[in-house]
Length: 396
Image (cartoon, rainbow, N blue to C red; front, side):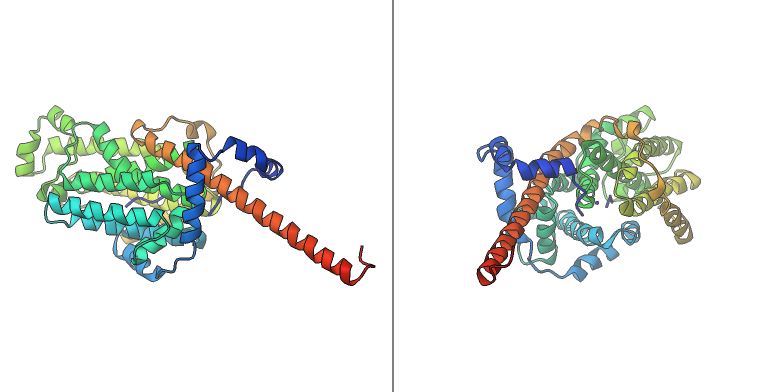
């Protein structure tokens, strides 16, 4: 539902140090340490998952039939990022449907157990025979996507199935972190953005988009027996949440709560700008396009009088095209380092922490693979030179 780079360029000094000091690495990242164990698991499962075939078209069809805004923005992504992003979306969409379409809570728990089993197989490098699972297996191992992010996503889906209650805006942030902040973090890792501050901004962009979705779908959710507006805000506006849910109607009190929610989303959209400037240049237009289009949903809702009970705001196609064209200029924007350094929203911090740990493992894996390749090249050249000398003593 949310959007948010191929591997980043690594610090040349780190490359030199790693090449010269592999023994020091082994001492620092010993087999018994948590990072060492993660490294071993990464190496084993990544090798198994890299070449598993799948039908990319099946994953793309899921994206095209799901979020139109996400699909439109994805067309601006470079191919190296678009394919893994499509794989992530396909699994997330199927997982959401599996839980959301369950007949009751028992069915939802059964669906969750099945999804956990599928994730076990994906992270073991032995995905089940689903195109989305096979595609995801390659992505999570290539880009070191931590299992904690996908587990958090499934938690959010389960909250929906269980009819979770949201009393405060912080409760809603926690929900948004799970169902959308996770996607922002995974997209950032796929793009190659691995710094904690950039990851925080990616998660917050996902939360902002989810708040926009909630503001837009107040009536639709209520008719399905779901209420995401903070109950504390409703109480402050003089609305009995349970009574209103039984008979949802639009009134100035509901409008005031929707306005507060859009204001909270706008704050997070503003914070996300710094994160977008920290992305690889060829990834910025797509993410900025998604940010502009989603924020415009809120603007359209305001133009509609904040009435998302009786109608559903949408951004006209011509307006989307204008916003997407504007987004293509974002690659010129220089990063605002001060804004990038803001502390993460507390509700997304655990996602940032999880991604940061696995980022270290990923960097080590990339560097060790590069060193192995370099060592193998030197060995091949030495062997070739030796054979040439044997055949022709004149060779120096």
